[in-house]
Image (tube, rainbow, N blue to C red; front, side, top):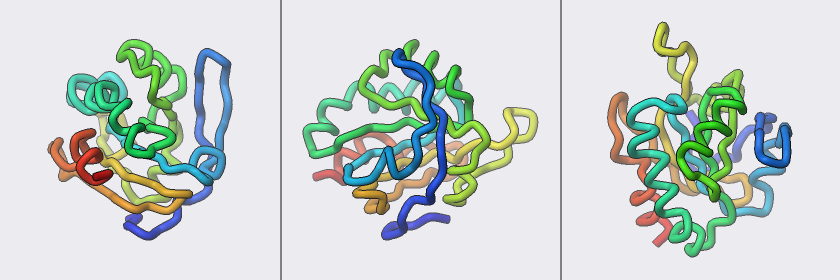
Length: 158
């Protein structure tokens, strides 16, 4: 599993915005930037939609005021689902990033197999990344939602 001090692996993601589709790389998203990345097991799922994403939507300005360039929400879903979820959640200030095949999630060792729920998914976590290097990592225990919240990220940003 990835840990504090590690560099994020090089992969390509899927991103669908009002400007169209793209496949940004880890380097494009993180190089020279301070980024908050949080991941959820699935778009439109209860805790993800009712608490995790909304916490970052409500606190986006506060997080960015602490020197964060970008806030990214990642899920092992396709870019169409991530775009629709972002729109439904008023997440204009958050990059809704798709790790459709789970290549990033597997590369950092935070995948989980959920069988009939949805197959390969991401564990719930948040991290602060500075120029591609993980400086803070908050991985949730299964079925928990405490360590990876927007409030926790705000505490870590000082």
